[in-house]
Every structure is written in C-alpha cells, then in structure tokens.
Length: 585
Image (cartoon, rainbow, N blue to C red; front, side, top):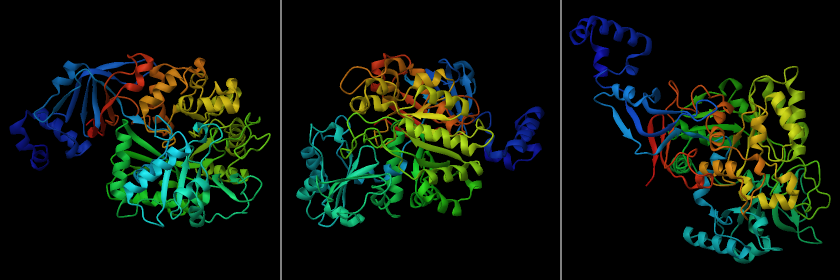
C-alpha cells in the first residue's frame, strides 16, 4: 500500500484521507522519500515488549517498557501503551517473555579475519577453551584434527591456542615433538597470544626459516640449548614471515567462510566487529565479501603498519570512516610490543622469570622499529585518521604517550579517538596522561581469568593486580572499552562482563578486587563506550530514537543477577538493523 501512494495524485489521496492528512503525507514524502513513509494502517515493522529493556542511556541503568522499530531504526522507546498504539496491520509484536533486551554488543578489538579461517584450524587451547593441557594432548588434538580433515602428506596443518604457561612444569611444545608426530606435513601451532607459533621442520621449509638464521630486531626465535638450531617457537618480528603467508579461504570459499565467522560474533550478541590488524590481502578479501553483500554485521578494519602505505594508495584517507556495504576502514593500527603472557611485552622493569628464551634481566622490547611507528602515527594524524596503538607493558605505554605528544603538535587533546589497545599494565600516572590527552584505553579484563596466574608469576602480585584497571580509568573521567582480542580468547561478551565485575583467577581467588566495576559499567564498555571509540555514538551503543536497531536479547539482565552468574547468561537472539541474524537453536 505504501508504494501505491507514490503513484496516486493528490485527489486520489483525498478520497482516502482528510485534506489535512493528505497534505501531511505529501509533505512527508517530499522530505523523506516515499519508501520511508509507512502508512498508518501498515504501522511500523516491529514492536518489542514484555521484558526488561535496558537502554544504556545515561550513567545509571535506565529502562523502557517497549521499543518500536521501523526501517532498521528505533522510532520509539517508552511506555508499552504508547508503543502498542502505533501497531498497524503489518506490525510484528515480539514478546520478550521476561527476557532482557539491550543494544547490540560492539566489539572494541578483535581479529575478525581469523574467524574466516578458524574452522580449518585445530583448537589445542587449554581448558576451558580447548582440550589440551600438555604437549601429548596437543599432539593428540592435532592428530584427531588431521584425521577429520583426511590430511594428505605435504598438506599444512594449523592449530591454535598454545599456551606454554599452562603446560606441566618443564614441558613445552617443540619442533622435535611435532616432527615425530608429523614427519610428512608442515605443522604450525599458533600461540595463544597470536604473536607467534611453534612450527616443525616442514613448516620451517615452507615459511623460509633455517637453522642459524639471525633473530630479527623485535623478534624471538628460540634455539636448542647450546646450538643455533631452531627449537620451534618464533614470536613477534620472528613470526612475521609465517604470519604474512598464513592461508585464508580462497575466493570460492570466502563467502561461506565469512558467514560462518560472522555467526560466531552474532551468537555472542555482537553486531559490530573489528578486524584489528589488516594487511592488504585481508582488506581486499573483506572488500570482495562486502561487495557481494556478504556482511550481516558491521566490520571495521584497521590497516596494519606493514601495509598501510600500499593500502593508502588504493584507499585514500577520504575513504576512511565511511561504511560501504557494512565495511568501514576505521584508521591505522600499530603494534608497539608483544604479549605479557608470551613475555614479549615491553616493560620498564625486568620479568621475574626471565625472557622467553631464558634471557636474564629481560624487560621485553619493541616489536617494530620505533622510528617506523612514529612515522606511521604522523602520517595518520596528518590525515586526520584514527590510530590504534597496541601496548601491553608500561614501557610501551610510555612510548605511546611520548609519540602522541610529539606527533599531535600543539593540540594534544584534539578529538582524535586515539586508542591504546590492551593497555594491560598501565600505571596510574599514565592513566592521568591519557585523561589529559583524550587517549581511550581499550582494556582486556579477560586476562584476569585466563592469564592472571601467569602474570603474577612473571610480574609479581602488586603490578598484576592493576592489570586492565577499569575502575581507575572510569574514575579518571575516561570512557574505557573492554575486548576479547579474539581469538586470543573466545568471543564471549558476557564472559568479558563477568571478568570485569569479578576479576576472578582461573586458579580461584581474585586479582585486583579494587578494580572491580559494576555490571552496568562493564556493559557500557561494550556498548556506548565502544560506539564512542568508533565515532558511532550517534547511531549505536544505546536504545534511543534515531539509532540503528542493533539489539540483543539475553536470558537475563546482567545488572539484576548475582555477579558470579553473569557468565552463565545466554544470548537468545541478535538483531542487526531490526532483522534477526542469530537465534538460539
């Protein structure tokens, strides 16, 4: 019926409506375009009611009774009576049945592209994420995966989730162990930090590693004791030759792979995801998927420093910050240091347990030459592009602050939305500097559970208790976000909220109880604060009129259950622009 008004003249409309309504509709059509003006009889597309609706508007929990959605946007949020008064003949009324409705979760940092390849890799993570607690169990999981794939001699086998810190004392995965189990196949087991891997001899041949080769600046290549023979573990800059050549789905496979990957996010209630270190081939793949209408969620890509120059040639700065079929290039990404659990994060004081290769007085080091980082930040700032800077150790964060001061010029507090990714071991004085410079900390409280015990061993209880200090950041007036860095840990937004609220160690006990925050504050970090990080606070992050109908239905309201029960809340349904993209089986 809506289209028929576009073809009717004023006289025809007069026969259907009063003269006043005729004039109103004609004016509305002229202002908004005929396709966006539903008739009163048809009504809006959807009314959602019947449960707690947490809007995430304001600094305290606020609720409405009903939400009205039309044209992919929220057109009303308020009382149930007012919402139902808008019901038309075509309106679908969705009854929550007591379940909770929230704005869709926004992923502040992950590696979306890895979701496309994850199905082709073997999970060798430690419990509760995976099955492997020692090298023998890793090999068993790899062998089971190889059998499931009917792996042929010469074919590559990749695992993910190796964490040497969870292995029994003195046991590590090595080239020798993998060679014995897979003499005819290249095998690589990606480290849980995603900053390295353990590879066997065939994989070394495949990726260009040789015994006796030098360790690149900013890299780690372990050697067999007393020799220059490679032990198997390569990290940071030493991992780049392999990382650059990791296989991804080909053009025939990428559409199906992209859908499977997006469903991992949608099943966690995520409606906007990040590809947090995008090379040129990755960006080209994402652009192909987007151009074929293959994205069901929004994806924001950040070109990585190694490919930024080439990406800018085909994607000039003027194209950044704009969605094109759900894909947006958000800005630039640089990695200053490594991971604290891999002992490659850069600190001002030594690790208590030495370096990854047994180095003494080991403080970690930059992952990339510092002058190259400074040059990239200057290029991005000069072109008004947002910069994400990965920094875990306090020395890396010192460098981020100094680089920002140098490259920002006279206006260090300009609204750039510069973001420190991870910022795990930020100090109180650095938080104060962030507040002064308007740098956003995107923190990582999942580390308290997954790696907290490791941090205590490596860095001591005092420094480790202040990792990802959400409360201190909020108290300083900052708007911190909180991420999973998937697939370092799984995409599980309720687990992320749980870790921020409870800060529980895997071994039991609490790490940094004084940095616990409320469930509402933890939700802000993955809704409205995350929208702000992306400059999308006007269109996402809360339930308000005019915003996109990106929504998630949960089995319970996280602010109303016991803190320890938050991680057990289930995602029932996820809606993107008002349409269901995931529902619980």
